[in-house]
Image (cartoon, rainbow, N blue to C red):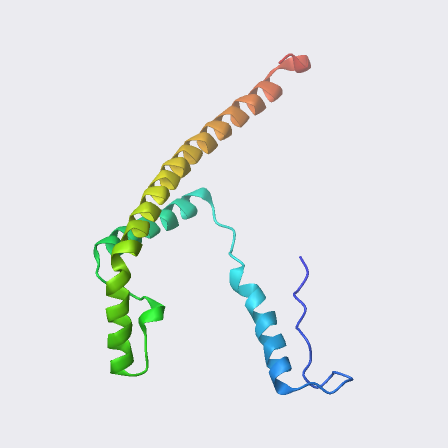
Length: 140
């Protein structure tokens, strides 16, 4: 695995560039790593899905979801207006919280089945290995 390119050097450009362009280039470069996720096993994925289901079920019952970044505002008046607008349209988005929770429940069930299958594959591989090593002359 190679190290990521460190990005453009702000002073190394041969042609004059404005600060806005350089800022955008830096922002795009650093945002590339934001989507990278570490490799997670099936059990870790299942745990993350269970946490997501719990969050969606909680948000489904709440008038305003906890930690909603779009409802933050620097002034109390703007914050009140945002909350009022959000509550006005909440009836429509609440349904999607429920649907996302239902879809994730199905994904959790699938991940549990994948865990079972992984266990069965390990057992079968062990049995095949035992047969290969235990059978003289390769009769398997």
